[in-house]
Figure: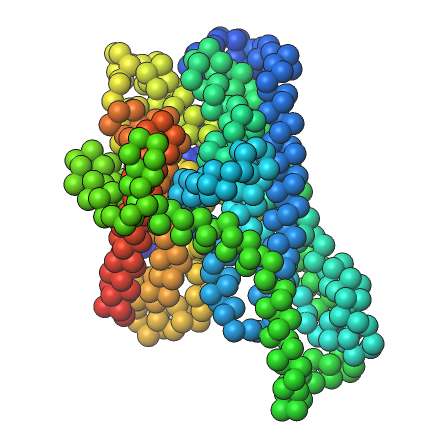
Length: 270
Length: 305
């Protein structure tokens, strides 16, 4: 049994990774294929789908919109995330579990229902649908991820450092700025990156709340109706894939550095 | 060094006469969390309350009648089309959570128990595909399963089939496959976390006391990792029931799910009360289904032990 397990489990793990990556791999492959129909055998290598992307004004607008929404939403979500994560990890207060449950709730609710309930409220209030309403929605769904990342960062460090700082006469703001903030900076940056990536890829909220301004996923959705546009979409998808990969690698590297830093400090004190 | 040690010891020793500070700490905690909480109340709780309110109203063309009525619920539950869509959505989310969790468990187990130094690398490898655009991941399944798709052309190239099969795309199983792929990481991570918490000495103790590897897994590791399995099921099941993109792109006519019906009521159909009732019913039913599955798993866990 043990022999079977130690032999088959790694093989299973390998197959599983293949299953996870297989669909993703086809994006770059077919994005440099000359044929407009994504099928094997491949017909030849070309960059033309990428070149075509650069002279599509609608795409440039959508990319710009996504960038604006992503940056705004990630900053807002991270600020709100810092408040929540700090309160949850540092303080004990009545209703803590309920409050954090509520903040994390968007994670386990069907997104379409979140989007539609926001849509009703916006329209009932007479708010015009715009990129701003998309930001509001994106912040809501980014907060749980931001809080998760920040919780991990805030939980790791030694609380006695803050107490030492307070005992040595620092004000609570001074302690936060000079002791806490440098320790949690990597977690904050990683929360910004994760929130930005989520906002960049988010479709449902943007689809319902964007009005006439399209974000990138909404633009892609529009293109998917036309079979002839598929290679361009695949090229765009490849670029997004590479972009997300770079951002997340940075986020992961920062998270690990933060982990090491916290552990290092802990060892130094002990 | 001693100062740090004293500082960390002081709150405990001085708890007795520090009541006022503790209370102000409560106030500080509440004050600190209030912006985020307020945001969630205004943009999550209030909108959902509005949806619930709408579901008790009715609409005649463009005028909303605000008298209390259960009509929308009657329509949503008795009209065969909505009933079928709801049942199909529930069935799909049940299948998807079953497949994702059972496929994810061995890999989470492998990483936790045999991952060694490379645990975080494995986790990173697993999460990467999930940060690529959701739309494009669904799209690439369309590329794989389509009539001219990778699978068909591959199978024909190998001489296994003579002409492209149409049975791969535009049906419920295409939706299930795509969603199972899309939610894999969300199942692996919680299971991994709970497996990490399993005290390894308990597994060893079970073995020392004569349990074989299968028995010690079934009686120690599996029951102790059930919280992770349960949260994986919840994280996968509840959102997938309302998935909009996947049924639209790979589901075809046979794979339509409740989200499409909800969308129609809010966009083209413009019957907000009916759409609201469909949303509320979907949330309630999927919560009940998830809760009963959690109960069943807990019961089973107790019986094994």
